[in-house]
Length: 327
Image 1 (cartoon, rainbow, N blue to C red):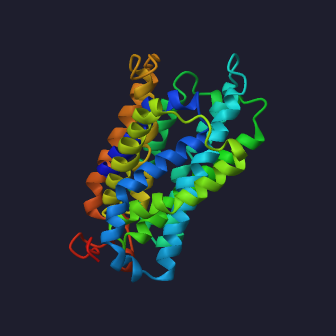
Image 2: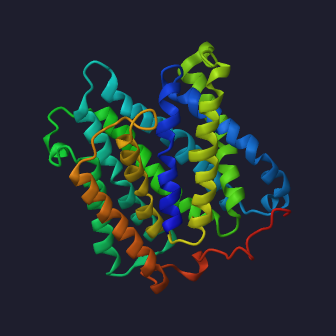
């Protein structure tokens, strides 16, 4: 479970590489190149594992395709567009919309828990719920440290932004459950590879629809270092670690551990430029960070005591039983 939190924290390093690119390219253009670079890196894995892929059932293929289309491609675009509603006017950002977006983001573990219960049959013991509540409270304090009452003071919320981010968090939560399902028959490197490779055509269509004939305008050689940073750290390394950890972690625990992403994101923002934005680190953020870390560490300790019970047919395979790279 701790490895899931570490992987989620690595996603936040995206904030160091992406801002410069967003000034030159659309979100779809950025995600397309990022996905392409990661797919190229993982192509040898797919070639070596072709035998095991050919033996997969239709349901496993459907789950892999759903992960690529939903969580990897569509959800990322939806979330980026939702954030964009806050900054339509750069001189006067609409922080009410931003607060709404982050408030709805906190629903991801809720959907993850529901999906894990009804699709994977996971049952949580009573000791799970207080710790999960503490984790959510900790993230809330981190996100809204400047004004804890902000989410309840939204006077003119953007309905479209809310719908977009809600769609994104539902897809991400479903992606955790689908990833757990595919890992029963697919090794974590192959699951990671298929997530990015199958998303490529979807992202290409999104960029073509958004940009039309200008879909490939704006790219420059000077953008390569930033693209490599995005692809290698929050992309390739983080997702490999994530699926490695998910194979050994119930989806109910993983969806809580993924709250490490907003924690790391706000800590990065507090670092001085050029790494961060020099944002002041408030006392409530520190309190929230302590609550989140303490609850995740405790849940990880209790994992060996079956704080979450999964049916045997959904138990992840051990590395020895996972399909080999050679198929």
